[in-house]
Figure (tube, rainbow, N blue to C red):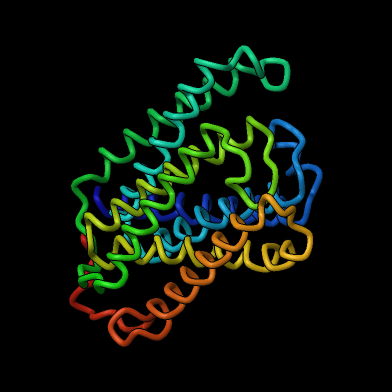
Length: 272
């Protein structure tokens, strides 16, 4: 029974990861069929940001399916529960003002279903053990707390629609959506800090690296065109991207005890 559950879960994770990465490519390369999924017209950089979020989700989901580290779904489930709960509340409070741009009933239904699904997903995997229980280096744990604080601050500012908090101008509805995405991600990194085992944190680093790789080149190009009021935000954001990319690359590919291929077979016995 447990083996059947594991096989089904891993298969669904792989399929979901591939679909998310395909959508990431669609947003990044401006495919009209994919851009139409975004409920309101937006600029090129906003589409690139959506692509980066899809990469940050799709890459670790694919890794979970391939590795069998199903307990790592807990962090992602918490992330989406926070994000969609916030969006549902925003739709209930302010949906009337944007009902001409989106189908309020449809998007509210999607948000509520997503909250319920992710809550149930968290409960379903809450008792699964992590297969890789290696401890997380202190630098990573400290960095996760810094990322948590940054994401909470920026996410809150975006929801409040403060101007110039992002490296380019955002439409009000885009600012709110991005803000809740950031607060969800903050929860993800907080969970990584509170549950410091490598089977939990590895997926977060994989997602962070995918996110960085999507955004870095467009951000560096944007340095030549950024408006003066958005320069500080762009410099800070780019610095965080560079730091997090170097952090992920080091611990995933170079650090002797955490790099790919360094797994101890005692940690990889099937938990089922």
